[in-house]
Image (cartoon, each protein chain N blue to C red):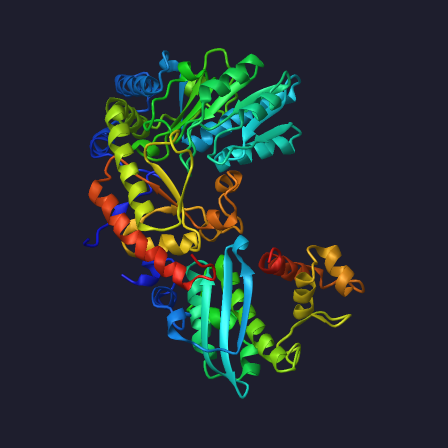
Length: 388
Length: 201
Protein backbone atom coordinates (compact mmCIF):
# COMPACT_ATOMS: atom_id res chain seq x y z
CA UNK A 1 0.00 0.00 0.00
CA UNK A 2 1.08 3.54 -0.72
CA UNK A 3 2.50 5.51 2.17
CA UNK A 4 -0.07 7.57 4.07
CA UNK A 5 -0.47 9.38 7.36
CA UNK A 6 -2.51 7.51 9.92
CA UNK A 7 -3.44 8.95 13.28
CA UNK A 8 -4.23 6.14 15.74
CA UNK A 9 -3.68 7.97 19.00
CA UNK A 10 -7.22 9.19 19.69
CA UNK A 11 -6.95 8.22 23.38
CA UNK A 12 -4.13 10.73 23.73
CA UNK A 13 -6.25 13.40 22.14
CA UNK A 14 -8.60 13.92 19.23
CA UNK A 15 -8.56 16.48 16.45
CA UNK A 16 -11.11 19.28 16.66
CA UNK A 17 -14.21 18.37 14.64
CA UNK A 18 -14.72 20.75 11.70
CA UNK A 19 -18.21 21.69 12.96
CA UNK A 20 -16.83 22.50 16.43
CA UNK A 21 -13.89 24.38 14.98
CA UNK A 22 -16.16 26.52 12.77
CA UNK A 23 -18.48 27.21 15.69
CA UNK A 24 -15.58 28.16 17.96
CA UNK A 25 -14.11 30.54 15.40
CA UNK A 26 -17.46 32.26 15.17
CA UNK A 27 -17.75 32.31 18.96
CA UNK A 28 -14.42 34.09 19.31
CA UNK A 29 -16.56 37.18 18.77
CA UNK A 30 -18.53 36.29 21.86
CA UNK A 31 -16.15 38.12 24.11
CA UNK A 32 -18.46 39.32 26.83
CA UNK A 33 -17.91 38.11 30.37
CA UNK A 34 -20.69 35.64 30.96
CA UNK A 35 -21.04 36.96 34.51
CA UNK A 36 -21.86 40.47 33.28
CA UNK A 37 -25.40 41.63 33.73
CA UNK A 38 -25.68 43.52 30.46
CA UNK A 39 -27.21 42.08 27.33
CA UNK A 40 -23.91 40.86 25.85
CA UNK A 41 -23.00 39.09 29.08
CA UNK A 42 -26.45 37.55 29.40
CA UNK A 43 -26.23 36.30 25.81
CA UNK A 44 -22.91 34.59 26.50
CA UNK A 45 -24.28 33.12 29.73
CA UNK A 46 -27.33 31.77 27.99
CA UNK A 47 -25.14 29.97 25.43
CA UNK A 48 -22.99 28.56 28.24
CA UNK A 49 -26.02 27.19 30.04
CA UNK A 50 -27.15 25.53 26.81
CA UNK A 51 -23.73 23.86 26.60
CA UNK A 52 -24.13 22.69 30.15
CA UNK A 53 -27.42 21.08 29.21
CA UNK A 54 -25.82 19.33 26.24
CA UNK A 55 -23.03 17.92 28.41
CA UNK A 56 -25.56 16.87 31.07
CA UNK A 57 -27.62 15.07 28.41
CA UNK A 58 -24.58 13.18 27.14
CA UNK A 59 -23.95 11.73 30.61
CA UNK A 60 -27.60 11.20 31.55
CA UNK A 61 -27.67 13.87 34.26
CA UNK A 62 -31.22 15.19 34.69
CA UNK A 63 -30.18 18.48 36.26
CA UNK A 64 -27.63 20.42 34.17
CA UNK A 65 -26.73 22.44 37.27
CA UNK A 66 -24.91 19.38 38.57
CA UNK A 67 -22.29 19.74 35.83
CA UNK A 68 -19.36 22.02 36.63
CA UNK A 69 -16.97 23.19 33.94
CA UNK A 70 -13.26 22.79 34.75
CA UNK A 71 -10.03 22.98 32.77
CA UNK A 72 -10.08 19.23 32.11
CA UNK A 73 -9.85 15.74 33.54
CA UNK A 74 -6.89 16.35 35.82
CA UNK A 75 -8.57 19.32 37.49
CA UNK A 76 -11.85 17.46 37.91
CA UNK A 77 -10.12 14.48 39.51
CA UNK A 78 -8.02 16.69 41.76
CA UNK A 79 -11.10 18.64 42.87
CA UNK A 80 -12.72 15.41 44.07
CA UNK A 81 -9.61 14.31 45.96
CA UNK A 82 -9.13 17.77 47.48
CA UNK A 83 -12.75 17.62 48.64
CA UNK A 84 -12.05 14.29 50.33
CA UNK A 85 -9.02 15.83 52.03
CA UNK A 86 -11.20 18.55 53.54
CA UNK A 87 -13.88 16.07 54.58
CA UNK A 88 -11.46 13.54 56.03
CA UNK A 89 -9.27 15.82 58.05
CA UNK A 90 -12.21 17.18 60.04
CA UNK A 91 -12.94 13.74 61.45
CA UNK A 92 -15.08 10.80 60.45
CA UNK A 93 -14.34 8.61 57.47
CA UNK A 94 -10.94 8.79 55.82
CA UNK A 95 -10.59 5.60 53.77
CA UNK A 96 -9.87 5.92 50.06
CA UNK A 97 -10.28 2.93 47.77
CA UNK A 98 -9.02 3.17 44.20
CA UNK A 99 -7.18 0.92 41.72
CA UNK A 100 -3.67 0.30 40.48
CA UNK A 101 -4.59 1.18 36.90
CA UNK A 102 -5.94 4.70 37.32
CA UNK A 103 -4.66 7.66 35.33
CA UNK A 104 -1.58 9.26 36.99
CA UNK A 105 -3.64 12.25 38.16
CA UNK A 106 -5.84 9.97 40.28
CA UNK A 107 -2.89 7.81 41.40
CA UNK A 108 -0.89 10.84 42.45
CA UNK A 109 -3.84 12.55 44.13
CA UNK A 110 -4.45 9.31 46.06
CA UNK A 111 -0.75 9.11 47.00
CA UNK A 112 -0.97 12.68 48.25
CA UNK A 113 -3.85 11.71 50.55
CA UNK A 114 -1.84 8.70 51.73
CA UNK A 115 1.00 11.05 52.65
CA UNK A 116 -1.54 13.15 54.55
CA UNK A 117 -2.38 10.13 56.65
CA UNK A 118 -5.45 8.83 54.82
CA UNK A 119 -5.64 5.03 54.54
CA UNK A 120 -5.54 4.41 50.78
CA UNK A 121 -6.09 1.04 49.09
CA UNK A 122 -5.00 0.46 45.50
CA UNK A 123 -7.07 -2.47 44.25
CA UNK A 124 -5.60 -5.19 42.04
CA UNK A 125 -6.98 -6.03 38.63
CA UNK A 126 -7.12 -9.39 36.86
CA UNK A 127 -5.25 -10.31 33.68
CA UNK A 128 -7.79 -8.35 31.62
CA UNK A 129 -7.58 -5.24 33.79
CA UNK A 130 -10.91 -5.85 35.54
CA UNK A 131 -11.17 -4.73 39.18
CA UNK A 132 -11.23 -7.57 41.69
CA UNK A 133 -14.75 -7.34 43.15
CA UNK A 134 -13.98 -9.57 46.12
CA UNK A 135 -11.04 -7.40 47.07
CA UNK A 136 -13.23 -4.31 46.59
CA UNK A 137 -15.88 -5.68 48.97
CA UNK A 138 -13.17 -6.47 51.52
CA UNK A 139 -11.58 -3.05 51.21
CA UNK A 140 -14.78 -1.00 51.43
CA UNK A 141 -16.26 -0.58 54.88
CA UNK A 142 -17.68 1.84 57.42
CA UNK A 143 -14.42 3.82 57.37
CA UNK A 144 -14.44 4.30 53.60
CA UNK A 145 -14.90 7.87 52.48
CA UNK A 146 -14.45 7.49 48.73
CA UNK A 147 -14.31 4.78 46.10
CA UNK A 148 -12.72 6.03 42.88
CA UNK A 149 -12.57 3.71 39.87
CA UNK A 150 -12.06 4.75 36.26
CA UNK A 151 -14.91 3.77 33.93
CA UNK A 152 -12.60 2.65 31.11
CA UNK A 153 -8.85 2.41 31.01
CA UNK A 154 -6.92 4.74 28.72
CA UNK A 155 -4.18 2.23 27.87
CA UNK A 156 -5.93 -1.12 27.45
CA UNK A 157 -9.53 0.04 27.09
CA UNK A 158 -10.99 -2.34 29.67
CA UNK A 159 -14.43 -1.16 30.83
CA UNK A 160 -15.28 -1.62 34.51
CA UNK A 161 -18.68 -2.53 35.93
CA UNK A 162 -19.13 0.88 37.56
CA UNK A 163 -22.74 0.12 38.48
CA UNK A 164 -21.69 -2.88 40.57
CA UNK A 165 -18.73 -1.02 42.08
CA UNK A 166 -20.90 1.99 42.96
CA UNK A 167 -23.41 -0.35 44.63
CA UNK A 168 -20.65 -1.62 46.93
CA UNK A 169 -19.59 1.96 47.72
CA UNK A 170 -23.15 3.12 48.38
CA UNK A 171 -23.97 0.11 50.57
CA UNK A 172 -21.06 1.14 52.80
CA UNK A 173 -22.11 4.80 52.80
CA UNK A 174 -19.06 5.92 50.84
CA UNK A 175 -18.95 8.42 47.99
CA UNK A 176 -18.44 7.01 44.50
CA UNK A 177 -16.28 8.76 41.91
CA UNK A 178 -15.48 7.60 38.42
CA UNK A 179 -12.98 9.05 35.99
CA UNK A 180 -14.92 8.71 32.75
CA UNK A 181 -12.46 10.71 30.64
CA UNK A 182 -11.99 7.87 28.15
CA UNK A 183 -15.60 6.68 28.24
CA UNK A 184 -17.67 9.76 27.50
CA UNK A 185 -18.46 9.83 23.79
CA UNK A 186 -17.20 6.25 23.27
CA UNK A 187 -19.69 4.15 25.25
CA UNK A 188 -23.08 4.93 26.81
CA UNK A 189 -22.53 6.80 30.07
CA UNK A 190 -25.27 7.40 32.62
CA UNK A 191 -24.54 8.91 36.01
CA UNK A 192 -27.90 7.76 37.36
CA UNK A 193 -27.76 4.23 36.01
CA UNK A 194 -24.17 3.86 37.23
CA UNK A 195 -24.98 5.48 40.56
CA UNK A 196 -21.90 7.67 40.73
CA UNK A 197 -21.68 10.73 42.99
CA UNK A 198 -18.85 12.35 41.08
CA UNK A 199 -17.78 11.83 37.49
CA UNK A 200 -14.88 13.30 35.54
CA UNK A 201 -15.04 14.31 31.87
CA UNK A 202 -12.64 15.86 29.38
CA UNK A 203 -13.60 17.61 26.17
CA UNK A 204 -10.53 17.02 24.03
CA UNK A 205 -11.15 13.28 23.99
CA UNK A 206 -14.42 13.84 22.12
CA UNK A 207 -13.28 16.03 19.24
CA UNK A 208 -13.64 19.27 21.16
CA UNK A 209 -11.03 21.79 22.31
CA UNK A 210 -8.32 21.21 24.93
CA UNK A 211 -8.34 23.05 28.25
CA UNK A 212 -11.98 22.37 29.05
CA UNK A 213 -13.57 19.53 30.96
CA UNK A 214 -16.30 18.83 33.42
CA UNK A 215 -17.16 17.34 36.75
CA UNK A 216 -20.55 15.88 37.58
CA UNK A 217 -21.50 16.27 41.24
CA UNK A 218 -24.64 14.58 42.52
CA UNK A 219 -27.03 16.72 44.52
CA UNK A 220 -26.24 16.55 48.22
CA UNK A 221 -22.59 15.58 47.66
CA UNK A 222 -20.07 18.04 49.03
CA UNK A 223 -17.53 19.85 46.88
CA UNK A 224 -14.62 21.97 47.99
CA UNK A 225 -13.39 24.39 45.32
CA UNK A 226 -9.86 23.83 44.11
CA UNK A 227 -9.82 27.35 42.70
CA UNK A 228 -11.34 29.96 44.97
CA UNK A 229 -12.54 33.32 43.78
CA UNK A 230 -15.76 34.52 42.20
CA UNK A 231 -19.18 32.98 42.17
CA UNK A 232 -18.83 31.18 38.83
CA UNK A 233 -20.06 27.59 38.73
CA UNK A 234 -21.99 28.23 41.95
CA UNK A 235 -18.75 29.07 43.69
CA UNK A 236 -17.35 25.58 43.09
CA UNK A 237 -14.88 26.69 40.43
CA UNK A 238 -13.87 30.30 40.21
CA UNK A 239 -12.48 32.03 37.13
CA UNK A 240 -14.05 33.92 34.23
CA UNK A 241 -16.12 31.63 32.04
CA UNK A 242 -14.13 30.09 29.20
CA UNK A 243 -16.72 30.98 26.56
CA UNK A 244 -15.13 29.35 23.53
CA UNK A 245 -14.07 26.23 25.41
CA UNK A 246 -17.46 25.70 27.03
CA UNK A 247 -19.35 26.34 23.80
CA UNK A 248 -17.04 23.97 21.94
CA UNK A 249 -17.62 21.34 24.63
CA UNK A 250 -21.38 21.79 24.33
CA UNK A 251 -21.40 21.24 20.59
CA UNK A 252 -18.93 18.33 20.77
CA UNK A 253 -21.15 16.72 23.45
CA UNK A 254 -24.29 17.22 21.41
CA UNK A 255 -22.72 15.65 18.32
CA UNK A 256 -21.21 12.80 20.35
CA UNK A 257 -24.61 11.92 21.77
CA UNK A 258 -26.28 11.94 18.36
CA UNK A 259 -23.54 9.80 16.81
CA UNK A 260 -22.75 7.45 19.68
CA UNK A 261 -24.60 4.42 18.37
CA UNK A 262 -23.08 4.68 14.92
CA UNK A 263 -19.63 5.36 16.41
CA UNK A 264 -19.67 2.24 18.55
CA UNK A 265 -20.65 0.10 15.60
CA UNK A 266 -18.34 1.60 12.99
CA UNK A 267 -15.23 2.12 15.14
CA UNK A 268 -15.81 -1.21 16.88
CA UNK A 269 -15.78 -2.85 13.43
CA UNK A 270 -12.50 -1.14 12.56
CA UNK A 271 -10.99 -2.30 15.85
CA UNK A 272 -11.90 -5.91 15.09
CA UNK A 273 -10.46 -5.55 11.60
CA UNK A 274 -7.23 -4.15 13.05
CA UNK A 275 -7.04 -6.81 15.75
CA UNK A 276 -7.62 -9.69 13.33
CA UNK A 277 -5.23 -8.15 10.81
CA UNK A 278 -2.41 -7.76 13.33
CA UNK A 279 -2.94 -11.23 14.79
CA UNK A 280 -2.68 -12.66 11.27
CA UNK A 281 0.31 -10.50 10.26
CA UNK A 282 2.46 -10.95 13.36
CA UNK A 283 3.17 -14.32 14.94
CA UNK A 284 3.21 -14.55 18.72
CA UNK A 285 1.67 -11.25 19.64
CA UNK A 286 -0.89 -10.78 22.35
CA UNK A 287 -3.94 -8.55 22.69
CA UNK A 288 -4.12 -6.87 26.10
CA UNK A 289 -7.28 -5.81 27.89
CA UNK A 290 -10.64 -7.53 28.16
CA UNK A 291 -11.77 -9.43 25.05
CA UNK A 292 -15.36 -8.09 25.24
CA UNK A 293 -15.66 -5.45 27.93
CA UNK A 294 -13.44 -3.01 26.10
CA UNK A 295 -13.72 0.44 24.51
CA UNK A 296 -14.73 0.14 20.84
CA UNK A 297 -11.70 2.17 19.73
CA UNK A 298 -8.82 0.86 21.87
CA UNK A 299 -6.54 -1.99 20.88
CA UNK A 300 -3.46 -2.70 22.97
CA UNK A 301 -1.06 -5.32 21.62
CA UNK A 302 2.19 -6.70 23.01
CA UNK A 303 4.89 -7.77 20.58
CA UNK A 304 7.37 -9.87 22.55
CA UNK A 305 10.95 -9.65 21.35
CA UNK A 306 10.56 -6.06 20.18
CA UNK A 307 10.70 -2.96 22.33
CA UNK A 308 7.83 -0.46 22.28
CA UNK A 309 9.68 2.75 21.57
CA UNK A 310 11.50 1.13 18.65
CA UNK A 311 8.15 -0.11 17.30
CA UNK A 312 6.54 3.30 17.81
CA UNK A 313 9.33 5.13 15.99
CA UNK A 314 9.38 2.56 13.18
CA UNK A 315 5.63 3.10 12.71
CA UNK A 316 6.19 6.85 12.95
CA UNK A 317 8.67 6.67 10.07
CA UNK A 318 5.86 5.03 8.07
CA UNK A 319 3.50 7.88 8.96
CA UNK A 320 1.60 6.00 11.67
CA UNK A 321 1.03 7.66 15.06
CA UNK A 322 0.50 5.41 18.10
CA UNK A 323 1.47 5.15 21.79
CA UNK A 324 3.48 2.64 23.81
CA UNK A 325 3.64 1.39 27.37
CA UNK A 326 7.41 1.01 27.14
CA UNK A 327 9.58 2.60 29.82
CA UNK A 328 11.89 4.01 27.16
CA UNK A 329 9.13 6.19 25.78
CA UNK A 330 7.97 7.52 29.13
CA UNK A 331 11.35 8.68 30.39
CA UNK A 332 11.03 6.47 33.46
CA UNK A 333 12.67 3.13 34.11
CA UNK A 334 9.41 1.29 34.57
CA UNK A 335 7.02 0.16 31.87
CA UNK A 336 3.26 0.82 31.94
CA UNK A 337 1.79 0.53 35.46
CA UNK A 338 -1.45 -0.64 33.86
CA UNK A 339 0.07 -3.57 31.99
CA UNK A 340 2.25 -4.48 34.97
CA UNK A 341 -0.91 -4.54 37.13
CA UNK A 342 -2.48 -7.05 34.71
CA UNK A 343 0.52 -9.30 35.36
CA UNK A 344 1.77 -9.59 31.77
CA UNK A 345 5.36 -9.12 32.94
CA UNK A 346 7.98 -6.58 31.90
CA UNK A 347 8.80 -7.95 28.45
CA UNK A 348 5.21 -7.77 27.21
CA UNK A 349 4.75 -4.39 28.89
CA UNK A 350 7.89 -2.95 27.26
CA UNK A 351 6.78 -4.31 23.90
CA UNK A 352 3.25 -2.94 23.97
CA UNK A 353 1.59 -0.61 21.49
CA UNK A 354 -1.72 1.17 21.93
CA UNK A 355 -3.66 1.71 18.74
CA UNK A 356 -6.60 4.00 19.46
CA UNK A 357 -9.02 4.62 16.61
CA UNK A 358 -11.46 7.44 16.11
CA UNK A 359 -14.28 8.83 14.04
CA UNK A 360 -11.94 9.75 11.18
CA UNK A 361 -10.32 6.31 11.02
CA UNK A 362 -10.97 4.30 7.87
CA UNK A 363 -10.59 0.72 6.65
CA UNK A 364 -7.72 1.95 4.48
CA UNK A 365 -5.96 3.28 7.60
CA UNK A 366 -6.39 -0.06 9.32
CA UNK A 367 -5.18 -2.02 6.29
CA UNK A 368 -2.18 0.26 5.94
CA UNK A 369 -1.18 -0.30 9.59
CA UNK A 370 -1.63 -4.05 9.15
CA UNK A 371 0.56 -3.96 6.03
CA UNK A 372 3.39 -2.18 7.88
CA UNK A 373 3.38 -3.82 11.32
CA UNK A 374 4.49 -7.29 10.14
CA UNK A 375 7.80 -6.25 8.53
CA UNK A 376 8.53 -3.81 11.39
CA UNK A 377 8.17 -6.46 14.09
CA UNK A 378 10.08 -9.00 11.99
CA UNK A 379 12.97 -6.55 11.54
CA UNK A 380 13.17 -5.63 15.25
CA UNK A 381 12.91 -9.28 16.27
CA UNK A 382 15.71 -10.22 13.88
CA UNK A 383 17.98 -7.75 15.71
CA UNK A 384 16.78 -8.76 19.17
CA UNK A 385 18.58 -10.79 21.82
CA UNK A 386 15.23 -12.48 22.44
CA UNK A 387 14.21 -14.91 19.71
CA UNK A 388 10.68 -15.41 18.37
CA UNK B 1 12.95 21.12 7.56
CA UNK B 2 15.73 19.45 9.50
CA UNK B 3 15.16 15.86 10.52
CA UNK B 4 16.89 16.59 13.82
CA UNK B 5 13.84 18.63 14.76
CA UNK B 6 11.34 16.58 12.84
CA UNK B 7 12.48 13.43 14.63
CA UNK B 8 13.19 12.57 18.23
CA UNK B 9 16.88 11.89 17.69
CA UNK B 10 19.78 13.13 15.55
CA UNK B 11 20.08 12.18 11.89
CA UNK B 12 22.97 9.87 12.80
CA UNK B 13 20.79 8.00 15.30
CA UNK B 14 18.02 7.74 12.75
CA UNK B 15 20.42 6.35 10.14
CA UNK B 16 21.82 3.74 12.55
CA UNK B 17 18.32 2.84 13.73
CA UNK B 18 16.90 2.39 10.24
CA UNK B 19 20.05 0.86 8.70
CA UNK B 20 21.99 -0.67 11.58
CA UNK B 21 25.47 -1.94 10.81
CA UNK B 22 26.91 -5.35 11.75
CA UNK B 23 23.69 -6.89 13.06
CA UNK B 24 24.13 -10.61 13.62
CA UNK B 25 22.46 -12.65 10.92
CA UNK B 26 22.37 -16.40 11.57
CA UNK B 27 22.44 -17.18 7.82
CA UNK B 28 25.69 -15.33 7.32
CA UNK B 29 27.89 -17.92 9.03
CA UNK B 30 29.77 -15.38 11.12
CA UNK B 31 32.48 -17.04 13.18
CA UNK B 32 33.48 -15.47 16.46
CA UNK B 33 35.72 -16.39 19.34
CA UNK B 34 34.28 -14.19 22.10
CA UNK B 35 30.91 -12.90 23.19
CA UNK B 36 29.40 -10.86 25.98
CA UNK B 37 25.89 -9.91 27.00
CA UNK B 38 24.58 -7.28 29.38
CA UNK B 39 21.28 -5.76 30.52
CA UNK B 40 18.02 -7.62 30.82
CA UNK B 41 14.59 -7.67 29.30
CA UNK B 42 13.01 -6.59 32.56
CA UNK B 43 14.65 -3.17 32.34
CA UNK B 44 13.92 -2.95 28.64
CA UNK B 45 17.43 -3.22 27.21
CA UNK B 46 19.66 -6.17 26.48
CA UNK B 47 22.74 -6.32 24.27
CA UNK B 48 24.89 -9.12 22.92
CA UNK B 49 28.30 -8.55 21.32
CA UNK B 50 30.13 -11.19 19.29
CA UNK B 51 33.77 -10.59 18.41
CA UNK B 52 36.31 -12.20 16.17
CA UNK B 53 39.62 -11.29 17.76
CA UNK B 54 42.99 -12.07 16.20
CA UNK B 55 46.27 -10.93 17.72
CA UNK B 56 44.44 -8.79 20.26
CA UNK B 57 42.74 -6.85 17.47
CA UNK B 58 38.98 -6.92 16.82
CA UNK B 59 38.77 -8.18 13.23
CA UNK B 60 35.02 -8.19 13.00
CA UNK B 61 31.97 -7.80 15.18
CA UNK B 62 28.27 -8.66 15.22
CA UNK B 63 25.61 -7.75 17.74
CA UNK B 64 21.99 -8.14 18.77
CA UNK B 65 19.92 -5.74 20.83
CA UNK B 66 16.56 -5.79 22.49
CA UNK B 67 15.86 -2.13 23.11
CA UNK B 68 14.68 1.24 21.96
CA UNK B 69 15.83 3.17 18.90
CA UNK B 70 18.77 4.79 20.67
CA UNK B 71 19.88 1.42 22.10
CA UNK B 72 19.89 -0.04 18.60
CA UNK B 73 21.67 3.00 17.16
CA UNK B 74 24.33 3.18 19.87
CA UNK B 75 25.12 -0.53 19.55
CA UNK B 76 25.39 -0.14 15.80
CA UNK B 77 27.68 2.88 16.15
CA UNK B 78 29.84 1.12 18.73
CA UNK B 79 30.21 -1.88 16.43
CA UNK B 80 31.51 0.39 13.66
CA UNK B 81 33.92 2.15 16.00
CA UNK B 82 35.58 -0.99 17.38
CA UNK B 83 36.15 -2.80 14.08
CA UNK B 84 39.90 -3.04 13.59
CA UNK B 85 40.60 -1.69 17.05
CA UNK B 86 43.02 -3.22 19.57
CA UNK B 87 41.06 -4.87 22.38
CA UNK B 88 42.83 -2.80 25.01
CA UNK B 89 41.74 0.43 23.32
CA UNK B 90 38.21 -0.91 22.80
CA UNK B 91 38.05 -1.75 26.49
CA UNK B 92 38.54 1.93 27.26
CA UNK B 93 35.67 3.24 25.13
CA UNK B 94 33.40 5.40 27.23
CA UNK B 95 29.64 5.78 26.77
CA UNK B 96 30.17 9.48 26.08
CA UNK B 97 32.42 8.66 23.11
CA UNK B 98 29.49 6.86 21.50
CA UNK B 99 26.97 9.54 22.49
CA UNK B 100 29.21 12.18 20.86
CA UNK B 101 29.52 10.15 17.65
CA UNK B 102 25.74 9.81 17.54
CA UNK B 103 25.39 13.58 17.63
CA UNK B 104 24.04 13.46 21.18
CA UNK B 105 21.22 11.60 22.90
CA UNK B 106 18.44 12.86 25.16
CA UNK B 107 19.52 12.65 28.84
CA UNK B 108 17.17 9.81 29.66
CA UNK B 109 18.66 7.75 26.83
CA UNK B 110 22.29 7.92 27.90
CA UNK B 111 22.05 4.60 29.73
CA UNK B 112 21.33 2.83 26.42
CA UNK B 113 24.86 3.57 25.26
CA UNK B 114 26.24 2.71 28.71
CA UNK B 115 25.00 -0.80 28.06
CA UNK B 116 26.82 -1.08 24.75
CA UNK B 117 30.29 -0.55 26.20
CA UNK B 118 29.48 -2.98 29.03
CA UNK B 119 28.50 -5.71 26.58
CA UNK B 120 31.65 -5.01 24.59
CA UNK B 121 33.84 -5.27 27.71
CA UNK B 122 32.08 -8.47 28.69
CA UNK B 123 32.97 -9.88 25.24
CA UNK B 124 36.60 -8.81 25.58
CA UNK B 125 36.73 -10.30 29.08
CA UNK B 126 35.36 -13.51 27.57
CA UNK B 127 38.19 -13.50 25.01
CA UNK B 128 40.81 -12.89 27.72
CA UNK B 129 39.33 -15.58 29.92
CA UNK B 130 39.33 -18.12 27.08
CA UNK B 131 43.00 -17.34 26.57
CA UNK B 132 43.98 -17.74 30.21
CA UNK B 133 44.28 -13.99 30.73
CA UNK B 134 41.30 -13.39 33.02
CA UNK B 135 41.08 -9.93 34.50
CA UNK B 136 44.07 -8.59 32.53
CA UNK B 137 42.27 -5.33 31.67
CA UNK B 138 40.45 -5.13 34.93
CA UNK B 139 41.73 -1.68 35.77
CA UNK B 140 41.77 -0.32 32.20
CA UNK B 141 39.78 2.86 32.12
CA UNK B 142 38.55 2.37 35.66
CA UNK B 143 37.69 5.54 37.51
CA UNK B 144 38.48 5.84 41.20
CA UNK B 145 35.36 6.78 43.11
CA UNK B 146 36.45 6.33 46.73
CA UNK B 147 39.89 7.93 46.98
CA UNK B 148 40.35 6.93 50.64
CA UNK B 149 40.16 3.20 49.88
CA UNK B 150 41.02 3.26 46.16
CA UNK B 151 37.68 1.81 45.06
CA UNK B 152 36.82 2.19 41.36
CA UNK B 153 33.62 2.16 39.31
CA UNK B 154 34.59 -1.39 38.27
CA UNK B 155 34.64 -2.48 41.91
CA UNK B 156 31.13 -1.07 42.33
CA UNK B 157 30.02 -2.83 39.15
CA UNK B 158 31.47 -6.12 40.44
CA UNK B 159 29.78 -5.64 43.81
CA UNK B 160 26.41 -5.18 42.13
CA UNK B 161 26.99 -8.21 39.92
CA UNK B 162 27.84 -10.04 43.14
CA UNK B 163 24.49 -9.13 44.71
CA UNK B 164 24.82 -5.65 46.23
CA UNK B 165 21.52 -3.80 45.77
CA UNK B 166 21.78 -0.88 48.17
CA UNK B 167 24.31 1.27 49.98
CA UNK B 168 24.63 -1.14 52.89
CA UNK B 169 25.15 -4.07 50.54
CA UNK B 170 27.77 -2.12 48.63
CA UNK B 171 29.61 -1.20 51.83
CA UNK B 172 29.54 -4.78 53.04
CA UNK B 173 31.29 -5.87 49.86
CA UNK B 174 33.68 -3.00 49.26
CA UNK B 175 33.98 -0.96 52.48
CA UNK B 176 33.38 2.06 50.24
CA UNK B 177 32.76 5.38 51.98
CA UNK B 178 33.72 4.07 55.41
CA UNK B 179 36.55 6.59 55.87
CA UNK B 180 35.57 10.14 54.88
CA UNK B 181 32.26 9.31 53.17
CA UNK B 182 32.79 12.06 50.59
CA UNK B 183 32.20 9.70 47.66
CA UNK B 184 28.73 8.63 48.72
CA UNK B 185 26.78 10.71 46.22
CA UNK B 186 28.84 9.65 43.20
CA UNK B 187 28.90 6.04 44.38
CA UNK B 188 25.15 5.90 44.90
CA UNK B 189 24.57 7.25 41.41
CA UNK B 190 26.69 4.45 39.96
CA UNK B 191 25.06 1.94 42.27
CA UNK B 192 21.63 2.96 40.98
CA UNK B 193 22.77 2.68 37.37
CA UNK B 194 24.38 -0.73 37.83
CA UNK B 195 21.42 -2.12 39.79
CA UNK B 196 19.24 -1.07 36.86
CA UNK B 197 21.51 -2.79 34.36
CA UNK B 198 22.51 -5.90 36.29
CA UNK B 199 19.91 -6.03 39.03
CA UNK B 200 17.63 -8.71 37.63
CA UNK B 201 19.95 -10.42 35.20
